[in-house]
Structures are given as C-alpha cells and as structure tokens.
Length: 158
Length: 208
Image (cartoon, rainbow over all chains, first blue to last red; front, top):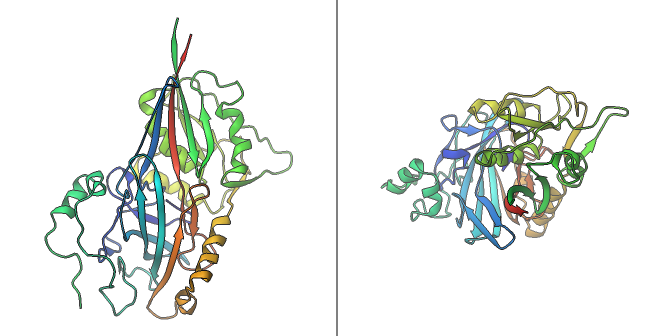
C-alpha cells in the first residue's frame, strides 16, 4: 500500500501497516510512514526445481473490518482519514482482499477515529472494538502485544 | 563442479516485474535489459523525451543472499514511482538501477521522504533515465468507481468539505491481484493511495 501524492500510513514495527481497531485515534500523534507500507508478505522459495515453499504472513492476514490510518495532503495541509479493509488469506495464498470503505476529515489537522462516519457519532456501529489476538498482532510484535493486553475498549461510546 | 545460483523474481500485481540473475548482468533476462521494457507493461506509462539517453545504468554483479529482503522492499517501491531500485552488489553495499521521474512530478515528494525512516538510501540524481515520466495507469480506479455506481454509493457525492465533516465513501471492492487498486480518498481526481501485490520468489538453481 503506497501513498501516491505524499501522505502516509500508520505503521508499526517493520514498516507493517497497522491494522487499527474501530475507534483508534488517527491524528498528529501517529507515526505515518511516507512510503510503501507492507500489509502482508507473500514469498516463495523454489529449491532446485523440486519443491516450492510458499508463505503468506503479516498483520493483515485474515482480518475483518480493520482500518488503515492515513494522512493525505490536501492543498498543502494534512488531513487524516481511514481505509477499512477485510482479508481472507490462507497459509499459502491470498484469497480475497476487500476494500469496504474509507473516509477523511475535512478539517485539516483534526484527528479522526477509525471507523468514524460523522462528526457527531463517535462510535460507529461496525466491528467490535476489541478483537481476539491474531497472527496480525503477533506480527506487530510489541505493539500487537499492547493491543492484545488492552483491557478497556478503545472507544468510549456516546 | 556443482554451483548453486540464486534467482530472484518480483511478481507485482500478478505479473513478473523484475527478475534478477546474480551472476550474469548482461545476458537477456537480467534486470538491466528488462526493466525499461517491462515497466510500461506493468504499472507505468513510460514516456521519454525525444533523443534522450534512456539506457539504465546498472553495474551490479554479485548478490548477497542476506540482503534480498531489503532489496525486495525497495523494488516494490521502485515500481510505484520511487526513482531508485537498489540492488545489493559485491564490492559496494548497493548497486542501483534508476528510473527517474521528471523533477516536480507527483512522485517527487514521496521519494525524498523515503529517507526519513532511515530505511532507504538518499535520493540518486543519476542521468540515465532523466526526463522519464512515470505515471500510474489508473485502470483500477475506474473499476472502483463503477463498483460505487453499482453499489449505489452516493454519500460521498453529497459531501462538501466547506464545513467540518467526515466524508465517508462506502465501497465493496475486491482488490484484484493482477492490477492492484488505487483510491481517491478526498475525491479530488487524484489518486491518493495505491494497493499492490508484490510476491517475492527465490529460486535456488543447481548448475553442473
């Protein structure tokens, strides 16, 4: 995933794009990687034409309604937004990677919450705020561990 | 005597973008000769100025296996407009092939900002493909828009950024493995983000 005109994507360890939960804040405090962010890795090794080992791994393997936190420059100022994605990825190959929506805040510099649909609604009615620990979290290493251990919902509903 | 070579292929959006032979730079199939001709068929429309020197400068020879991971990441960026592709070389830490966008093009900012994280090397100003314009062929965006129309997604068309609000665009688009997908987050007619698939394939080849 790559920002074409500048901007960036919230990333964690290893330049993996962080799969945010609904309600995570996306704003100036985040670390936005300006280059290509890896969502998962697909690689294979062929050994002497006799065997081929293929693997797919990364934080976006088999996730439902997770969010990319993004920043995008509009008229020279930074706006924040999110992109919602779901993936079905097997052990060896990608089955489906689906974009289900995206949004941005029209006020420059104002944070937005992942999954937020309106200014008033701070708690969109989609996806659970907490998820079971996943391989994606493990791929995020320490950051994923923090998400896993988090006890409170990431978003206070109004 | 048996010798083992390593061949590396990058499959981007379902097509072979680059392949690299670590031991022979000059034979057909090496990245030296294939890169300029492949890119137009892949993600870019490659337009050169008339009479401009267009041959890529590549002097790399040997690969080091432990650096393949680093190279794969950079090559992925390169095929999305970053001007340099770094190839791990024998004598020096990196060799390169450059496909340099025109100064001030849409990729300029991104390529300079690559150095912020300390992951990539500083920008290269070599002359080999100077003047080359690299543009993303935006076929997938049309598909996405068509998908919006079919799905009755109208909310974003009503949204105006004059007041503080969130412009939400519902979608239901599967990212195609053979083309990737671009999205225009703020609907200003410019692509903001691009999804692409990069598959790295390493082959160990035994030669007698």
